[in-house]
Amino acid sequence: MTRLRLYLDLIRWDRPAGWLLLLWPTLSALWLAAGAYPGWHLIAVFTLGTILMRSAGCCVNDVADRDFDQFVTRTANRPVTTGRISVTEALVVGAALALAAFGLVLTLNPGSVLWSFSALAIAILYPYAKRVVSMPQAVLGIAFSMGIPMAFVATSVASDLWGQATGVSALTGWLLLSNLFWVLAYDTVYAMVDRDDDVRLGIKTSALTLGQFDVAAVAVFYALHLGILFVVLAPLEHPPRLLALVIASAMAIGAVWHIRGRERGPCFWVFKHNHWLGLVVFLGIAVGDVWG
Image (cartoon, rainbow, N blue to C red; front, side):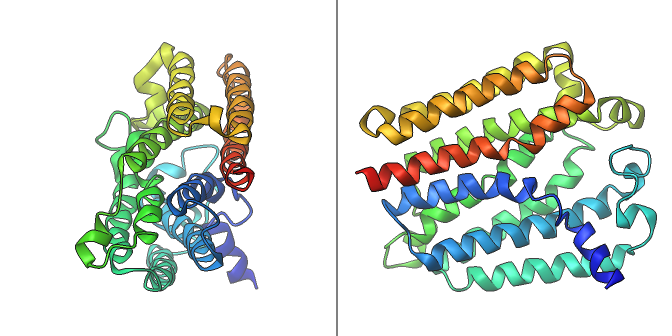
């Protein structure tokens, strides 16, 4: 049981915000791609796959950051950092979780299988991006958006493999771009929590790159995220979508106001609760489809 608790700690089981931030835009894309309720099979595959891949990502991230995490207040007690779980063991757990997710993908069409390799590659790449990229949050944004094109590919009715693999549309691209800006918003806020530690360790983050313009940039990222959704979701034709986007906009304004002092506590609170914004948008899309 002690070992199980360590594994659950490794994959952040008691901190579901991470996989919820992944889940809501993925389900939103799935609903839009299907044009209605997508069916229990697709919902189950994408929900479980999201949880499994986020958990696998935590394993890779903790291995990649083990030499840094011990000097950061928020991460000093992680299992790999403290040696309670070895590097090899963490990688084995991560690989097992990724294989389980791949098993789910195999129940989808061949195009989805092809896209899953790209999603895995980006997920592995992200933990190392902060060494060389001035805004690694952009890489995370791509990693956290891969469920969107996969949702469109999974619902593709193309009769051949190439058609399924490219079963994306302009809407897919706009949703991916919108989600990228959302990730930049909430993960910049997350980076603001560790600003002092990251400066000392020489780690690159968007919070440091943006400097004194970090709060203003977060506001712009939120505005771009929701602005794109206002255009592509045609909310005036779907009252539930309009209501959801108005509520989400109010939540974004509240988040920016909350972090205006750049204090660690409020910034961490905003990050942990950002998934509610994604839920609101998803509900607007799902209810909007029922509304007709």
